[in-house]
Length: 175
Image (cartoon, rainbow, N blue to C red; front, side, top):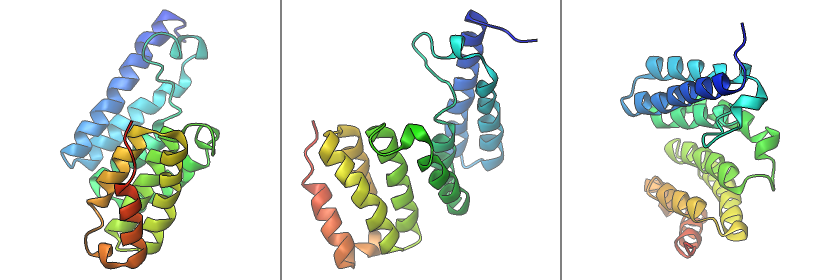
């Protein structure tokens, strides 16, 4: 049986809570509980569009792939994260020119995977695109995430491409 309208909004909140729980479980380094919570959050896709996008929450499931990928990065599961985040980039909502903030966050997570793998090419490729998004959109969120990414460079900072990228990120203004 399907609930509609206000019932869907209440269920949407429940699924959003599951997504938040997944983030908490990732912070606790509990992959199994994190995945269970993400799977519960996926149920939002079965709700009618009338109830899901109304109200303050607007949790409709379109962000679940990028959320799942971010949680995998947080958990250090780089193999799972990379596949999930690359698939997320292919979604219409993250197409170039759609959502600078969301696309930037996914690109930065992919660059962070490169940093953790000590792969300067991956870092530069994804971070450079995120940097261009930050410049063109003047997104303070993307700029702050890029600065945080620089903390993960570690030994890669000796690579001239990564060092140059870090210098460009440092020069970004934050609105």
